[in-house]
Image (cartoon, rainbow, N blue to C red; front, top):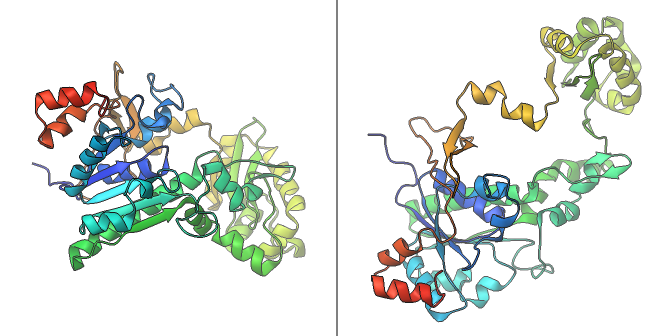
Length: 398
């Protein structure tokens, strides 16, 4: 029999929606926590309807909500709030990313919860923090990308562009996850249950630290340079003679000399004063890139990558998402696993969690339908069949 998962026995109750909080709780579920996702009656988490591309289900929702139980509760009703309170009495962690002030209005603020349930770990995921001048503002991923300056670093000199994934939400979810793990460890070792708070703004602000240092102490922010690196050169994509885009990266002087001698066939270029240091190469990026582009124009993509490999220069083809799906690093290592989704005739392929724990197979259970576990959870709370039927009929749980 396999050993129990690391978080087996931990119960998480989550009033979650969209991306950040569901990402945090899904990772807890991966490690064996029981995650009870409390959803609105009549549709549930609005992320269920972002798109319909995965056998009729939303791609975001399928990604973020496997291995959870779905309970629908009308928290505007007194009985709905009472049922939630009963759930919290037996829970270890409570996660919420409701609109600003909504949890407090329902008596679910962190301090109030801990006064009633001292061993509960409340986790709040907010936009800009629960205090300060922006505490009442709504925050979505792209808004936070704008406010942290990330949008001004991403794109071409002519146009700022959004990062292609929900990077602020993902950052917030990651810090909520690690914060909850830290709080569980603190409770286990000291008996104290800390509260956890993460804002999307603070999470992405941490990820902006390098450009913040560069800007504060260098006087200008890193430029937008498309797929090239703003502060390292050469580091970016070049087009080979067959149209294949290949990205290469030179990180130090040894690699620079190898690129000049073994790939470009111009060993004397390593001593050119325009390119003598990393800062010099960035300052003369256009001239350097033009030299490298000429060499790529003489080679096919595969040939260029083989030469770069031989020279010890890091490189990669610029893949499409379709090419990523069949990547040998995923397929040959068995990183794709089957997960069931509601109403689908066959499982979908999901990636295993990135952190591999020896001897531990992560949980990869189905994505729940809205309210799929409502009746079973109500029965656990001591409700008999007649009362469950009445709660469903009256819309408290439907």
